[in-house]
Image (cartoon, rainbow, N blue to C red; front, side):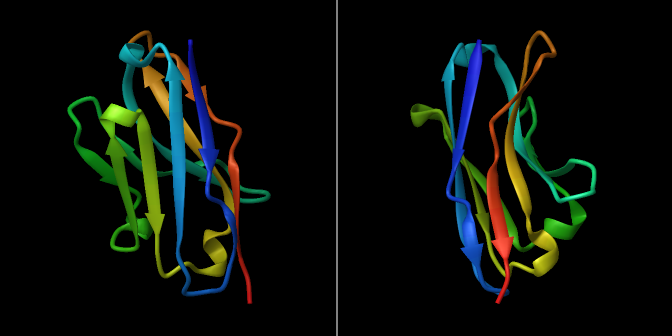
Length: 116
């Protein structure tokens, strides 16, 4: 079993930045890919950025240049540095992992609010 716990969300003004963190625990070797998704009220959950099986990074087009995903393999952590935040970036941000058994694991989410 894999568990994911996010942190780092909060209220930020437009143009501001936040660093989100995701701590993975449990059966770490079963994880083949990890990343971030987000879901705004009334909208579908969407990809933000992920590390693929090969370690390649994929970003959603609207986040390229503003968001940066990184990881610390020794600490089992994945991070999302967000910059130049816009009101439309407000959402619950979820950490996601896919295992080698093609099971999807989600964290509980962390709220990002962008407002002046």
